[in-house]
Amino acid sequence: PDAARVRQMLDEGMEALAQTADLQAVWQALFEPGERVLLKVNCIAYGGPTQPAVTYAVAERLQEAGLRAENILIFDRTDHELQSAGYALNEGGPGVQCHGARGEGSEAPLTQARVRFFQEIDNCDAIVNLPTPKQHGGAGISVAMKNHYGSVNQPGRLHGDWCDPAIAELNALDNIRHKTRLIVGAALKVSPADWNKPKREDALLLSFDPVALDTVAREILVRHRQALGLDTGFLVNGARQLATAQALGLGTTDAGHIDLREVLLG
Image (cartoon, one colour):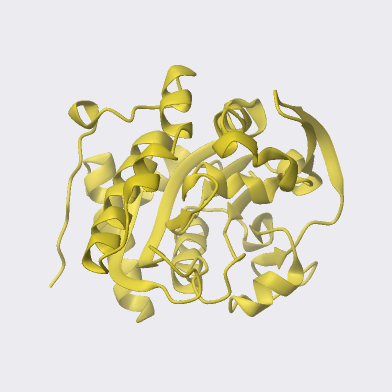
């Protein structure tokens, strides 16, 4: 993707989200100059990861808002997955940092199991969640909320019963709920079927509400599966985490309460 066009998409989306043209003021209102900001990407699918052009655009805007490049960490669970997705590893050198997990941190006590956050989640001050929309056979969809299965050490223990209530409970913990300042869904490509054969969507999804963003992303995935002649029922019935997260006060899945604004660029 063209980096300049992606930055334009990010800027136009932020303007619509914040309802102001003073974008630097928006970024400065969301992030303090001295904060350590973690950009949580999703690289589990080599063919359809969070697109680096989107992540680096966010990192650039954070630096323009006064944050040190060295205090920005592009993070997912392993170095190998980050590299395979097109990210340049950097641990301790000048510039934006990028590396996988370096150890376990605090416990995340959930109904289904007890897992631990990676220490990078513990150590950051703020999070920008950068998921890419995918269908998921065990959770209906994998977007903003399920992206944090890459923030804990044993996500395999949290896949029972359609990942419910594990996904919602995980996102309700302080480490995620109180640190997440922004969600930028990297939907330049989405994965309605085979994760390694994503389809073009040419969009970014921006929100402060992970439940609303996941709800909108689900409709995009439904549209793509319908175009492919594939079943869509499990995307709706399997995504139980949306209703559970709404009940926990994390956001809304009610279309009547979601203010969806579409910005089309020529």
